[in-house]
Image (cartoon, rainbow, N blue to C red; front, side, top):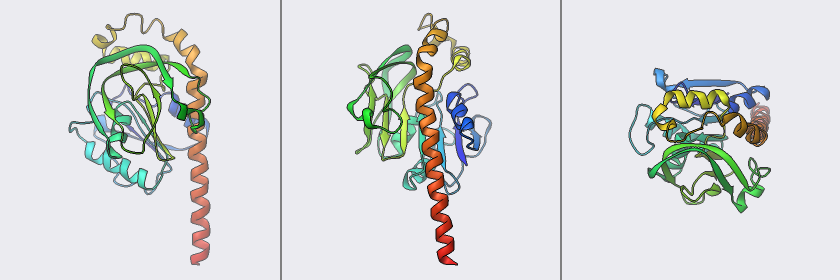
Length: 243
């Protein structure tokens, strides 16, 4: 089972969910915004996806401690993890880094630059050196020791990263489609107004982004499926040996 943690109704998995569905991977959604309890263990998980939200990773909010505990358990068990925006910041905190306030809101379509390490990354190797994405955040993070920076920009250097060999975070919103952009703008009209043309530009921006977006999430889904198969095979032979 892949656990998806949502913090707000407009911050769904969008293209991530589509890729997981297309790969035939079952998902379970924890909607913290309606009071769903965060799972206490990662024992039955083959993947974990933590979405964005308006909260701050460096301040307490309902479910924060439980989410950090779940992320730490997933990291320890090498369960594939994908964190988006707030989810990426929580992933960094769970691994020993820190979330902190940024220098102001970064909202709208703008480039990120892939690092040298991205060229050999499981998810980002096929992404071009420059990728135009949707930014929508005001906080940032300090990566833990040993994390690998995968994408950056001048204003907020930490845009995508990997922890170990199976956990990724993106500060930007690679998961968005047209419905997502509209939902974000509706939920945060004042923030959206600081990026004139954000919604009108979405069809063209997404047309250019789509194949790279979908490729990243298809590779994540394939990675999850492969890990799940490996785990099932190990469990089978362990049971046979015990019997």
